[in-house]
Image 1: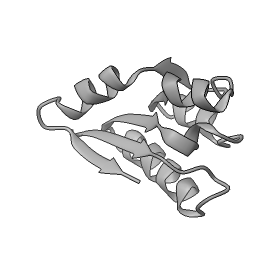
Image 2: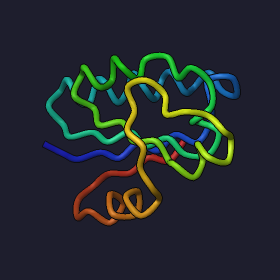
Image 3: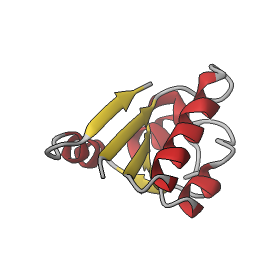
Length: 101
């Protein structure tokens, strides 16, 4: 199976497509693929509904710590604080399919 890295940069308040990307991540994971979902920029703001469901579906949810600090918000439920070095490492993983939204 393939490995996917889905990077979300927008909040649910900015774009209705955010929910569609979360659903895509869950579907890929249910289909047996490895999926990392990484929140950067404004994606760390707001409730980010569905992050806990992503974790339950087997998706690893990472949240950029610098974006959290800049916006003075806590790590959303279902996410794990990470840094950009981790994002770069995931991007550089051989064979990974990356989608930046």
